[in-house]
Length: 335
Image 1 (cartoon, helix red, strand yellow):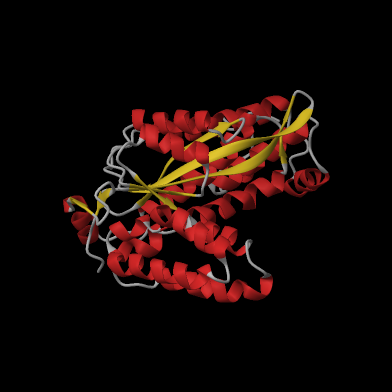
Image 2: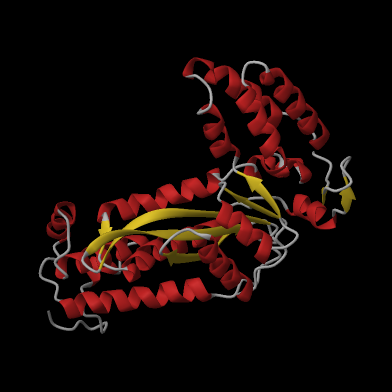
């Protein structure tokens, strides 16, 4: 293929008029094809896109252009803080390594900045989602400027919570209520699940932190006779499942679960499922990084995720003691 006037080794029709995430997808599909590791689905896409005649050097040139954009996005300073709320999650992706297909963990962090806008703070890839991986990831965010984290929202993962305690001292942890509910309902018969779910949801329907705590106690006692295992789980998880209640009431729906992160994961999956098995780890970072960079830019021009006034109240909040003198948490009036 002759070199074009723009200096590119690949045609404008293939990449330049496409959104960045789709450009990355095309590049990864092409890389799978030229490396001879494509699946039947990828082979079909290659023919549909008309890229079966691209050479390895042309595909490499495509990757270099995209990689520089992703690298800049992943290493940018985090200078819009403080970031009071931080959401963390990981998703498994398959990749070919050493002649085998293995799974690796793609970890992603999102946050709300000082102006109330959502940001995607970081992305990294690890062999497994363990404490060591999360420590490396959080340390990297801190080095780039992450500060002021008051609450971390995530699923229940011992390695992650240990890393939060070590790298984000003073931050509370909110266990995702959606995943907690699923775990809870697994402990009861299917016929009783609607009743138990309705009872537990009343905890989150209360207007103030005090009433959340009171309702949790009432629900626990009401369920204890018929569902002792559920009552025990509620008692054990109560500080983490209701951590949201110590923060402004208008934030509760956004911070009591990891659902916002799950929606972002679905957007990532929409692209990664097309590839299925990646040819190498760089290809994963290339595609997922472009999806995240695109979403980050869309959030920057969208409506504020949280109001400036509510964030100001959060910043001005003082730490007070609760009824248990050994437990201290930032207490705010729910509004």
